Length: 306
Image (cartoon, rainbow, N blue to C red):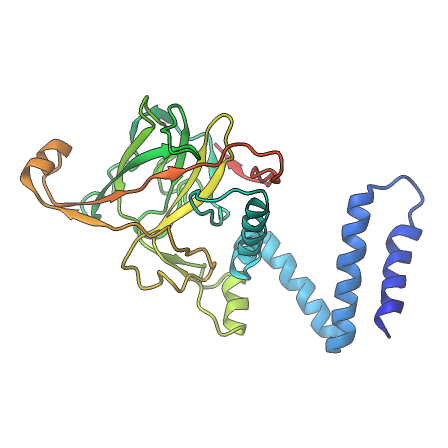
């Protein structure tokens, strides 16, 4: 069947078959996706058994709540970021902190504090390297932004996130920090480890078929927002991780790999009230001002809340 005939069929099945008012945007998207899928079936000679195997796979991925992970692993979430970067560049925005993917593991409602927060609950202190991270949130003109919100979350030493991992305390390794009058934020935590897709999960099942690993480098997620400015979704990677530039989710970017300093000076240990050397990361965020010519940076998607 030629592509023109397939496009006609897709329109007939979606638009012409409608017997009551429909959402025109949904019709437009479904006609396109349905037509493209039918073209792929035709061009690749996908058999009925292969088709139903794919349907079963998608059903299993949905039941396992891995579709968000799959979107990252196939590069779809990174592709959305590429499009957003291009839109901001066309609107004349430049010089801000690079965005990168959110991932599927944010949880709304983390405890809020001003200036400083401790993220970890202390249960992994004996095994972990203590981390202090600090910096300033700036606007596009380089002025500090007081009252900006820095939402931060990361995995524990096993690569697991609180809320999704019920063995952790509520909001472990999750906090919201409001910058002080000089636009500064700081937190104490543990240096996270990298992690991989569930080894027996649906995402890893497909990655195995594609000859790919499902590993991520150690990283820390952020939402950074302030009134009158564009919300930033980003994460920093921990320098030195073996998967730093081989992230299965394609989220590693230049400008998001700050240096990790090891601090062992007794005076600094005493100032931080720790009795062993610690890791320190300095990282500033630079936000764009709200711009009418650029699409909204706020992404509406299903997220967990506690």
